[in-house]
Amino acid sequence: MNYNWNWGVFFEELPGGEATYWEILLEGVGWTLAVSALAWIIALVLGSVIGTIRTTQSRPLVALGNAWVEFFRNIPLLVQIFLWYFVVPEVSAPLKAWVVQAEPSHVQFLMAVIGLGLFTSARVAEQVRAGIQSLPRGQRAAGMAVGLTTTQTYRFVLLPMAFRIIIPPLTSETMNLIKNSSVALTIGLAELTFRAREMGEYTFNFFEAFSAATLIYIAIAMTANRVMAHVERRVAVPGYIAGGAK
Amino acid sequence: MDFDFDVIQRSLPYLWKGFQYTVQLTGIAALGGMVFGTFLALARLSSIKPLYLTAAGYVNMMRSIPLVLVLFWFFFLVPLILQAITGADRPPQVGAERTAIITFILFEAAYFAEIVRAGIQSISKGQVGAAYALGLTYGQAMRMVILPQAFRNMLPVLLTQTIILFQDTSLVYVISATDFLGAAAKIGQRDGRLVEMYTFVAVAYFVISFTLSYFVKQLQRKVAVIR
Image (cartoon, rainbow over all chains, first blue to last red; front, side, top):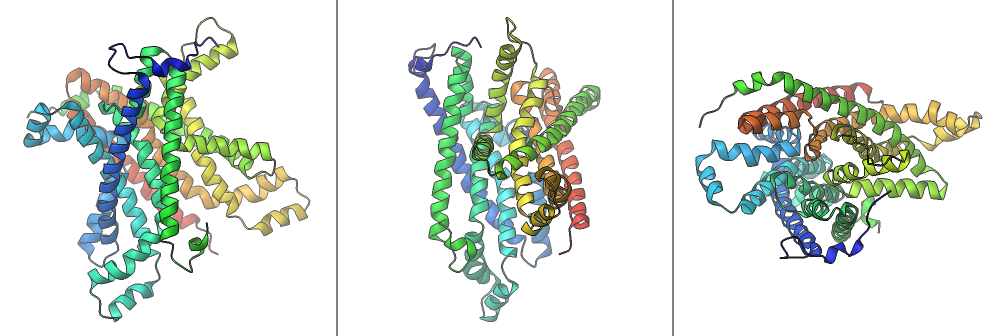
């Protein structure tokens, strides 16, 4: 294979001379983490609400929840991000007015966060619904029987149990979210994969650039995994099979 | 605001070609991924240490990096590897479309491997014992006893993964392959009609994925083994 290895390339400067390659990769990591963190909050909040209303007795709420999940699950993430970035501003005049004068990276960041957050919210909603439905029926009945309102039953009985049960699937959704944030490069957001490709194109050291990005993604995934495993142990339900596992 | 939805009708033949590629890519990647994934799963469950370490390493690696990055990796590596194999002077021109097929088979295999592994592990140990007691070899036991039952249990999950794969193939956009989304993007950029094209693509993906998921749910009810 004729390939010019150069592992020192990370310390070389960009053609403009304003930064070295490892610095822009690090900047990319910053965008990746920022997009992932904000999108994760949106996904968790909306996903919990949507997942919960799908288990209520109210038909319109269940229908709304189902429609939400089907909509965001059946369109590819890339297409959804394009919808937010290219289509939505064209049909909303005030948004368009903001987009035109705003910093491009701010627009890319916002649309990536919204797109990724809503996409993931549908997945979280599925997990939350499954978690609530996996609880014995007696739990809801017991809540009602001691005189709690529906809201209180969810708040004090069902949700605290459901959330603790669904931490393992939520962990994999978190990892998926971090990986999916790379799709934001299609609208020009300079996150990690974007920077790795850019570095490859400038230096022709694609191998070194992609290796660095791969290792960083693995490190992020492992960290997220450890954090979630810690949370899982802290909140484990005593007496459940998964609870005692270390 | 003026929208021109006629652009969709005008470009239908081109979009259809892109769509055919999307279906082709989905089909080949699903079949190839399931075959390779089954071997990976068997390797992961084997008692031969180097074999299961390699398989586990491959699966975990593929599952911890983004598909976009994997596409970039292969887009860069495939020509170099082919050059090394054939000993040509210059890296051969493989093209984004063929690179994408190779990438998706190898990438999806990691995901299918996990499904198949769970499927095999869901079969009761007594089945394996019974197969060996009858004098079947490992290969015969897998082929005639374990895998047929495992695949029946896994079928809905495998099909759901294929629907996800169908949606994920849109990511070949990043290496400029002309799939369904790629074709729409090219027309949209040429004619300045991104809004119309992307809306159309979103509706089409939604209708197809929604319908397929519906059938998978029906099938799930049908094939469920009553225990």
